[in-house]
Length: 241
Ligand SMILES: Nc1ncnc2c1ncn2[C@@H]1O[C@H](COP(=O)(O)OP(=O)(O)O)[C@@H](O)[C@H]1O
Ligand SMILES: O=c1ccn([C@@H]2O[C@H](COP(=O)(O)OP(=O)(O)O)[C@@H](O)[C@H]2O)c(=O)[nH]1
Image 1: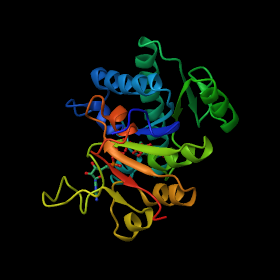
Image 2 (image 1 turned 120 degrees about the horizontal axis):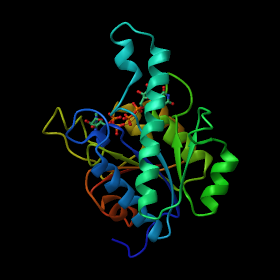
Image 3 (image 1 turned 120 degrees about the vertical axis):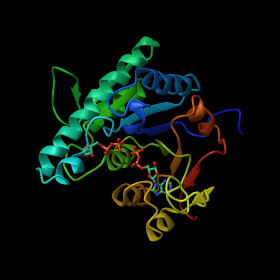
Image 4 (image 1 turned 45 degrees about the vertical axis):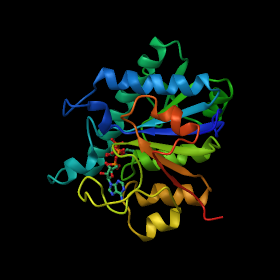
């Protein structure tokens, strides 16, 4: 493992579902604090961090659609969930003295600033942690795609997907105990093999912009810092070249 981080500017996608911990719904503050601690450690290493946080701990649009409800409204509710999570993370970062700003894809000026690429870049250049809320601002998308989009917009060196599992496996490791983890794999292979650790739009967007994706477990405190220095418990999705 290297002494210094291997990346200067990164986009962290933090699983919304992970935030509920063992509660089954909502926000477990201890987990938000742990993620804030990991982000603080990355800042101390000098890494510039943008964050997209999911909303699955509160609401997913597909849950409405699967019960015959209106998908678009459901997705709007999911986007609002990501704003709630982003505000919680900003609070946890603030407690640690980390200057963080929430930029929402959906305007809600009383709560937070509205996203623009120029504003985001200016804040990141100034050393603030930028929390990208509201996903892409569009229904039928996910926060994984929002993460790939924002990573491209801020010129991130890598997209870190902090999720429930510690990498990309040959099959869903939660369903198939014989599944094995890849050390590295290309974006094309992930798509061709249908490895659904991330949605296809997100993988394709990262591929087109030549952004590596590092999939790692968000549950391990300190894990993000280790992976930033090249620690092994992860999968790197990158170009063959
Ligand atoms: N080939 C695979 N490798 C790793 N994880 C997979 C794979 N196929 C499906 N998964 C599942 O994908 C989940 C992560 O995707 P997702 O539900 O989008 O999580 P998040 O809450 O991080 O957005 C993992 O918890 C894992 O169970
Ligand atoms: O650009 C986006 C991002 C998210 N969502 C909605 O917000 C929910 C929460 O996001 P996601 O499922 O990606 O969160 P995570 O899996 O990380 O918990 C999604 O299910 C969608 O309903 C959306 O409509 N557009």
